[in-house]
Image 1 (cartoon, rainbow, N blue to C red):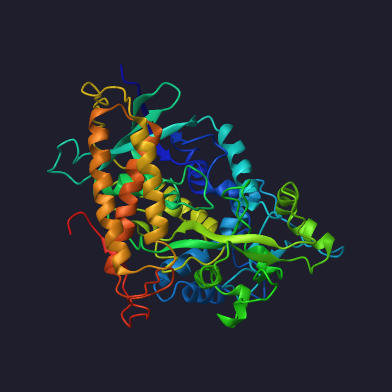
Image 2 (tube, rainbow, N blue to C red):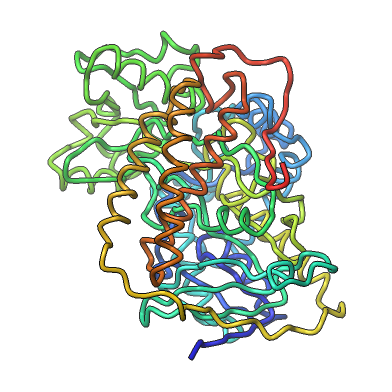
Length: 534
């Protein structure tokens, strides 16, 4: 018998966006919060650098807006950028009020917060907690959420699909989100979650690539579910590759924060030569797309496995106090960053596109909201500027919460009894190898054909193969009970298809999308917005 749950608000995702939205709403609503893994898992936890905000008197909103617009290669929505930056100070103060501890200046006569500078920023405006800001934010907010009586946590749940009025055949009405199906990994059953409001805070889709800095949960679930339900998506071709992920056989997906370069670390070839000044006058502090392409170019030109990030010229105490997590983690791998350079390669890091939303975080479906990396707000344009991501999570989570609160006293349509999940026609799979094989093939072909440097021929080849994989998975999905791996593969194939379609439509090179067939930027500035109605 299918288990049914009901709440005022269903929040799918438990990173900074989902947690902060839940905390803002919990005094007024009952909330079911779905976590794909443990509450502490997710991209927020692994964010090292910090949060960009206008906090210093020498800085300004206009300067932060200008830097963001420049990094976004002309595609940022200035209204969204200004809205985000203008709310940055309040977002940081809210975290401080909630107990998040940020690093202070190491000066006897100062109690100010320490601000660092990262690529693309013209000022020191990155507030941080040493080199583990995301961990501090995640653990603090997680602790608060666990104490809230109006928030019920559901850990180890994979969202399967959204439930909308149109899917239920109520075509004469606005398409309204009514809840979602989710797979409980503890009992392998799909359960029903009904809610008046649904918030997607599921993060990005970088797991679609072979090499990524993201945790395993970043499989594009929210984007895929929203797309299948009728939402538009935008700018999926802009997937940010972080320039510096640790290259080591015993450590996968370990990010080396941009803050190292902000504090003077230099990128070098195996012979010790610096190379970034040849690519950009800002050298190591150029935006991420430029640095990642430069590293990719040098690796391919020289036939080497990696390049090196060197901060050993700084004082030992400075390195250990500013980057304690990285120092200790690498020391455990026999790399002493006070004396040795760090082997690094680019890795898929951040999805700059996503579900189209407005400044209230509303999607195309009534009462469905999207916040954080899953959403396309217009903030990032063609390239995300460092440390704007956590800021976006906080600002748009607040916007979604305010919009939901504004509807608190409105009369909503009577809640329809949602249908149970039907698995009467399926059986247990005896061919799980099909899923694992397709999984690996997908990630390899995306890395090889839809990576840092692209061509039309590569994109078209990837598109054809994705279609075949989708057909195989569709047949598999129709005949067997769903599993976590199958759901993720299905979603990643949808996201891969969206990335490729957007990339093929963009006949230029801009920001994170670089194609050898169209190496120049077009004079026309236009988002790539796609709809199932196209």
